[in-house]
Length: 270
Length: 297
Image (cartoon, rainbow over the protein chains, first blue to last red):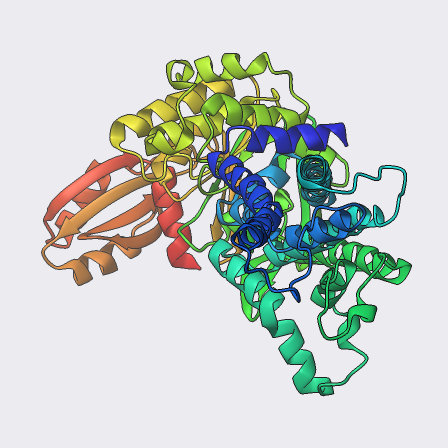
């Protein structure tokens, strides 16, 4: 396993696009998490100018324990950068025929896939640590209630980890399935944004019990929107075991499907 | 002699197309084995199956007397078709990846880069290399783990004459070191200059297998031409000592017993009133053998 990690490191350490995308991800994570300060500035200006309408609630998203949920939710919007990293890490190896050369040189097919899954795992861990760091920073700087004793809602950090892991496993499978990097990225975006929901609406109808088990639905269910004006009592309070189990199940399934794909095909024709 | 490679009924079908048909051959340790055939004859498909990137429809093969695996591939240095490397990485970084996969020592990197004459450019990115340099890097990569077997697929394809000579000398140098080499090529002269043994493929079928030293001993080829080619052919065919007659360009190529001389031929023609406008005795080369075989089948 260390050998496969070293292999991925050798492939990526001088790969500029990889580091640029990673930097962009870090930057957009910061921007996404800092969106709450914009809201705070608006309410602050309204307060000082004296025309704050009483119905606008206190909009500090950095108060413990809600901050765990709020920032995990904001972070879920920028995971697409990590998806692009994973897709191009795989489909570039296919289009540049380095996958073929790796196999010829003596890497087994499962080792190749394993090395890519390790990348997925490392990126998921890195993203979770980044979120943890950002939550601590924004919580310390802007949070009005600093209540470290309660562990309430810390499980959203785990929810974020499972969310990224499942999403990147999905991207890994797309990378294996679609040869062209550009097409794979477009497919990933289209499928995530509406295609999955749309297809299951058409096949099973608007109210169906199938689509909730589909990958993007499962990924989105892990960390749901942290507020609701219409139905405040229905807001998610913790990450359910069911969501975690479904996320891990899809992760394993995407790995197995990728394995079937790489074992079945002639690597030569990839 | 140790058998390095043995195939049994190796077959690959692409739909209805039979790319490689029931191929049986063996390669012994120390041979420089040429796989000769025109484009589309199944050379690369055969090598792809031997390197396990193409799955055979039927048949099997053994490397070093064992069922092939990732482990056996580590003992083979190979390039298939084009040199495939990470374009954004330097030669050294690319070879580090190969060394990691093969479990080769990193100290070998500079040794092989010096061997192929790329040491001075080792820090430059692969994408900045000329085709010849890419090809040399591929050979360096295949030598990295000091493997028993090298597989080279069209190693001089697309190179200028200088590059071709460079690569050819490199292969000869490697062959002298006692390594077993499998070389696929559509160039007859290349196989002739480099190989000790060869096999001819056409449309996936093996037409011939033998050693280069066997060739040229049993046959002498005489090229002949005259004004009336039809009369010439009729006369020649009936002569004693003439084995086969084939058309090559404007000439007839006749394969004869070693005792048959050009004097004998011209005397025989003179009695029929034919004057030869071209008469040339050549040593049998793989080229004539190749052309003969292609026309017979």
